[in-house]
Figure (cartoon, rainbow, N blue to C red):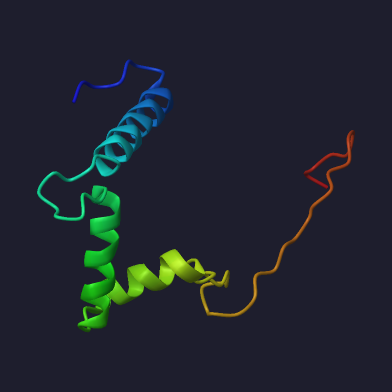
Length: 99
């Protein structure tokens, strides 16, 4: 994949991500001619995921749970596992910081 032009790495990366998303979307919506029921590939992939979860595949179970219920919220804690403390400092203009 070509490198992003200097000074614009985020624009290129975002564009590449959309290209990939679009390519996967197109490929997943194709009807599978080898499927006797002529289902779209996305339906077949979903069925494979569910069958893997039913068979006990832990990663498939996690993916299925994330897709159905959403990902678990990540707790925001300090380095010791406690709540974060936010300190707002107000700077006064004209005050000598050395005093």
